[in-house]
Picture 1 (cartoon, rainbow, N blue to C red):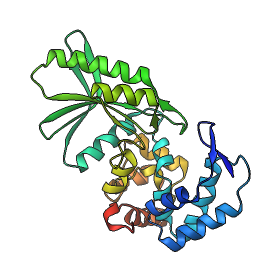
Picture 2: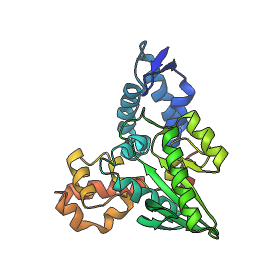
Picture 3: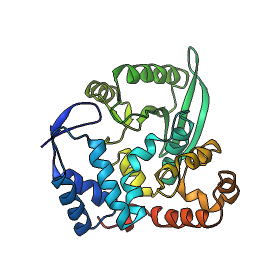
Picture 4: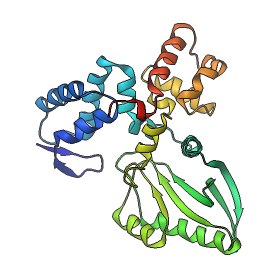
Length: 275
């Protein structure tokens, strides 16, 4: 059966990919297998990956909200816009959880001009200057011209700080084009995308740390998510200490209890989940 991806390209449907994504969300073999069988029976030629996701997500919710929330994490990150600030903050928190120190929105003087750096990551004897490229469409890829201009900025910063052990990084919530990856590899420019680098990609970091954006929560409405983000409340695990923020977003009483119960189930590092 041929399906249509987010970028408009088509490919054969592969059951094992759906099973793997459900397993990464914490579903056991029986649940992942059952949902995959149900979704497969309803496939039709040209069905979009978005529709496949919607059906699987709906089935997961009947088992447990936290499973559905983990499964929806890619789309949850897509909802962190449109300002881009929540995404930069989210990236910084992921690296802090791994033991690095981070600064957000810094002005750094290069040899020629000043540069606004989205995130600076320090640790392990290295300084990494991060450009965060947020996209709100799953099919959009960060291309060659982006990594070219980021590398030019890094070269200018390095010229002003020749003794500093540093490198640049481009982080995106989607994917990179093949040419962007080839150039970055040649220039030692680090890339962090939804699926790169293998084993330590953005999805891996989220699952490993248990740091999920509040947009993943199935108990929140779109309006409530927007209200929380406007207060710069980005991470699920901060909500238990944000009673005033929840109230300001109109989330009180039983609604707040339901949200916090989902937070407790969701914010579990992947090492404690079924693999």
